[in-house]
Amino acid sequence: MILELDCGNSLIKWRILNSHDEVIVRGANQQLQHLLTDIDNSQQNFRFCRLVSVRSEQETSQLINHLETQYSVSVKQALSCKESCGVKNGYHDYTRLGTDRWAAIVAAYHQSQQATLTLGFGTAITCDFIDKHGQHLGGFIAPGLMLMRQQLLTNTNRIHYHEDLTKDLLAPVGRPGESTEDAVNGGCHLMLQGFISQQLTLANQYFGQHFNIYVAGGDAMYFDIPKAHHMPDLVFYGLSLLCPIMDNS
View 1 (cartoon, rainbow, N blue to C red):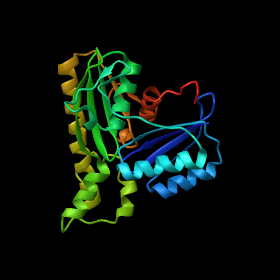
View 2: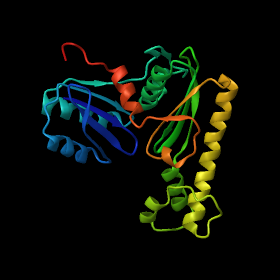
View 3: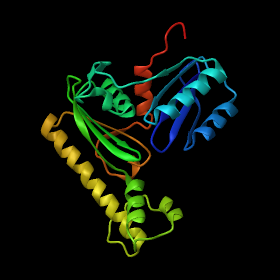
């Protein structure tokens, strides 16, 4: 069995693959201890583990140490680098590019083999441009839906609604809000839809009409992105490219 982990800012997503690379178990946790409990409860024997993490070095090290000790398994961590799998990192300091973004960039270009735009919808919305030669041109980062709403709730005195309602406020409204909930929801969607539209415009300027769009992340379904390839496991796919299983694993 192979254990894969995508340790993001808000959630740690994980999945277990069998010897045929088929997903047999998957989950997501906010807290590290809950993650470890769920993995322990899966009662699997792992021969290999790979992960990508944007969490603190302390938390990432704690997770790796637990897995290596508990399961006597080799744990390989993906890191951003200058070049990998035919993709050249576009950051001046390549180590500063988030490893989850790097994994998604590598995965998208590996699938596309031509000019590519990637969009990731998580705590933040990320956008990256890769030309037909595999050169990463850089990207943009904006707050995601939940983060926008949380900032309004936290930093304004008279914008309030029960946070339990936010699970019902993901789909775009399409009309002026007649309640605070609808007004906040609609405003956040309009801002982010404008952000996405601008990325598509820039991609047209850089690449012309010939480029692919790869989209990942839980909130992607709430936005209209024409001709986009939705790949929920894009980061995991990139992780498998950055951390292949060696014959002696």
